[in-house]
Length: 223
Image (cartoon, rainbow, N blue to C red; front, top):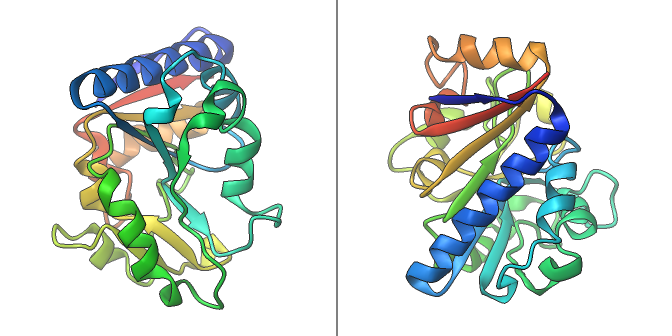
């Protein structure tokens, strides 16, 4: 694990956005296309605001979430809605959105189709993850019903998981997809999460799912 501690959050957001952009530019130069996977929630919003304005060849970038709640895009709980509002706008509106939700009562009803749409964009060129104070990342929650399967080396790329802390059912990228990303960045802020990620270094992924990606990750932190 590499840790970059920034003097303040503003410098974190700008520095991280620059690194993400550089990774996408490098991937496009090497292969002619790139993929970017990002978290939902409010923490990465300022990074999205900065990144969306960068003059990349966005038409060659596929963007998808690390995970999504099983709710429609018009729900305030939708990560996809946040993504459209804060990242897929301005120059970045030309990027291709790869969905992790499609209308259905249960995620299992659409999982195969969503996985098929995701497959051409793997491995992930640039991966940005968040982490909860409980050390979950994506929707790999401690205590989730299928966590052991989602952490396994032979896990399918996309799974539906349920956990008490998650609220709705979730669709999530699994550990092998996260681990195979060409560049792995983790964004955290505040003393509580700094302490949590340090604690995770000595725990198994079943107790601290973020541990599954820490060895090859760069952690970006500011108070």
